[in-house]
Amino acid sequence: MAGSKALPTFCFLLCAASCALAAASYDYMILSLIWPGTRCQPGWNGKPTCCVDPLIDNPELDFLVETMETYDSATGKLVAKCEPSCRFLINPLADLMDDLYAYWPSLSCPAQNGKQVWKDAWCTYGNCTSLSEVNYFGRALQLRARADVLHALGSKAIIPSETKSYSLDDIEDALVSKIGFSAVVECTTEMGVLSGKYLLSRIRICVSADGKSLITCPFSRKSNCGRKVKFYPFTENMLGRPRHPAADHIELPSDKAMAQ
Image 1 (cartoon, one colour):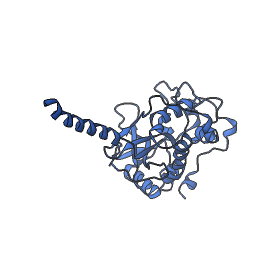
Image 2 (image 1 turned 90 degrees about the vertical axis):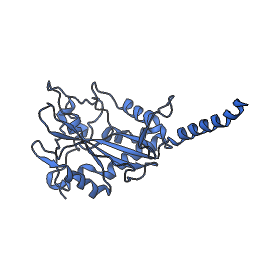
Image 3 (image 1 turned 180 degrees about the vertical axis):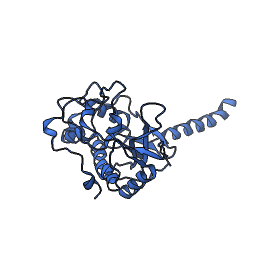
Image 4 (image 1 turned 120 degrees about the vertical axis):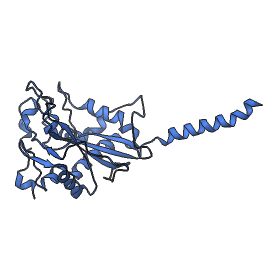
């Protein structure tokens, strides 16, 4: 008799656990854009910390896609690695390759062609979505262009500079003016524990579950930057190789153009 009375309770608990697991699915994403001027600062020995495959053109001198993560708005927690036996196919991305090389490259050393970066993004986050590979990567690239962070900052006279520092409030206001929603500004600290300088390293923007829209973040997220932020330029010598001749059309907009 005791066993029969315990069974309904056990079943209820099992159902509750199953329902909790089922609820832990993504319903929004965060697009993470890195600023290579900070990511590629030379190491203490002066050697490049970023490398690009010599067979591929240099990435654009712009904010680059790092990844697009999946989140659960009920908990605010990351949803990742939903399919342990993930399968990544490069062929469906053929029409996106030029844009992937330009805006979602591998910057790690030794140089890679980018395939591992895209595979990691897809198998960690992309396959948690209802999107195809083409839509996951294509929509991330489209949203990066729509946010147009570099121009948003430049329109408020926030230009990459070796010498200037900018107010975190001004950076955040410039992003709201362009995107329509607040974005999270992340920083790293300049080499040397006593420098106390914050370098703009990453912009994180919330995205709808279908990857089509920029949205207000369901959870409040705060910047880790100080009140003043450095925004170092990104130059080609940071990539550890000469500029590819085919990429000569790529140039950073002038201060005048950025301020328009």
